[in-house]
Length: 116
Length: 114
Image 1 (tube, each protein chain N blue to C red):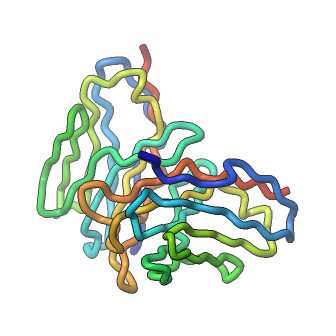
Image 2 (image 1 turned 135 degrees about the vertical axis):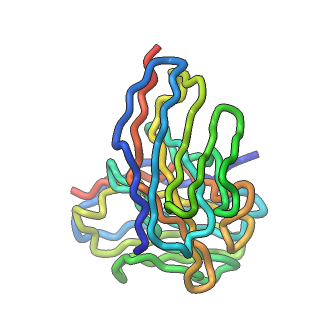
Image 3 (image 1 turned 90 degrees about the horizontal axis):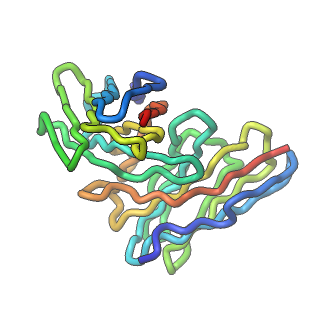
């Protein structure tokens, strides 16, 4: 069984540029969440999508946006990149909108974004 | 207060020892407490989770102890092995705007010496 897959694995961008990160959830999982993990810190919640609708948003600026497609894959977009956006971006999937249950969220390996 | 405070920041134990990682929270609206293990270059992987109506849960060598009145919970790793060397995160789940999100602690870097 394929787990949560994210692409690309690594990315280097320049300040002011735009970036798109992609995530494919586990087959059958309808909920996708995005987290930002700065080096040495715990993941911070950015967005949750369920059935293609935004169901939750963390304390991130409007430069961050996301969407979910009919096949439940998702994209995270970040505009006008800042040095502080350098982080590991994690995608997590769950069968339901609740993100609870025996298995919690399953995380992908992340996309390491470096802004120079 | 939507924070989860985790300690210690790092921990070194001998093989076979029992490392203990502690977390504390303030918001009584948290209702699900998972622990995640993260290896370098990988995403966090769920180890074990507990709900606040349970005081202890064991899965293999991993045990969560939960003290609802003190708003604290901890992870114990029995018979620790070098392969357990990783960063461990506690988290708490909270409902907001019709969905649950996780609030993570700052992580504990565990090293188990052979």
